[in-house]
Amino acid sequence: MLTATLFRLNLTRLNKDFKHISRRASFYACRLDKNLYVIGGRNETGYLSSVECYTLESNEWRYVSSLPQPLAAHAGAVHNGKIYISGGVHNGEYVPWLYCYDPVMDVWARKQDMNTKRAIHALAVMNDRLYAIGGNHLKGFSHLDVMLVECYDPKGDQWNILQTPILEGRSGPGCAVLDDSIYLVGGYSWSMGAYKSSTICYSPEKGTWTELEGDVAEPLAGPACSTVILPACVPYNK
Image (tube, rainbow, N blue to C red; front, side, top):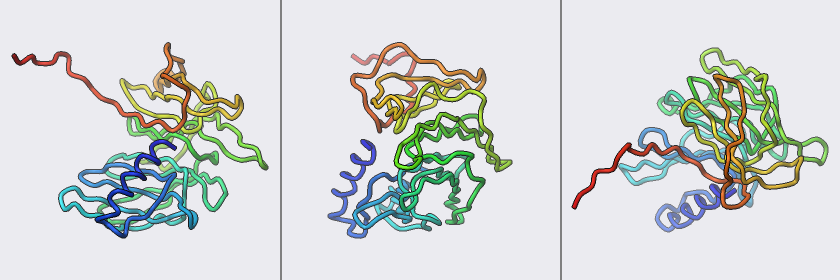
């Protein structure tokens, strides 16, 4: 995936100063407070469970508690001061697992499994809920799109399948949240055998999907997306 490749290049460059940093791809990376976490993935030796944390203030990398199981191609999200990891591939098998990391206690906890096995999907946070969207799983030797959308309640530790499935299969979509809607950009559809250039939007309040007008420059999977709130006006200085 593009995000994994770009970040791996950055880690490789940092290896000159931080010899212990692992080479890895298909991982999840996120920022929590003043730390950057790199979680799981795989390299030439196999699947990884290790988790590395970079602290900006000390300019140092360190290992923290590992995932309970090696994972790659999983999704993740930060919510209420904790990191959630969903799905992924474990030693060649697709899994429905959900793990939660508490950085204060430095411990991982197993949570309720999703109803569907999936990998290369999106995990979005909105209104104290986590939404697992898209991705794929294997049936025999065939990749199948996961069409079901699931919603997780952290307080009740419960997953629910939403009545409205995704419009079309999307593996490796970019994902961002804006104005009470979840946006998916690009991705790969296994049923269509094609990369997507369109953007689709899900409104949890309405329970509806919408395909937006206009496409990205080219079909792609694995883009990184972020929500940027621009000011209503920009001060002009002569």
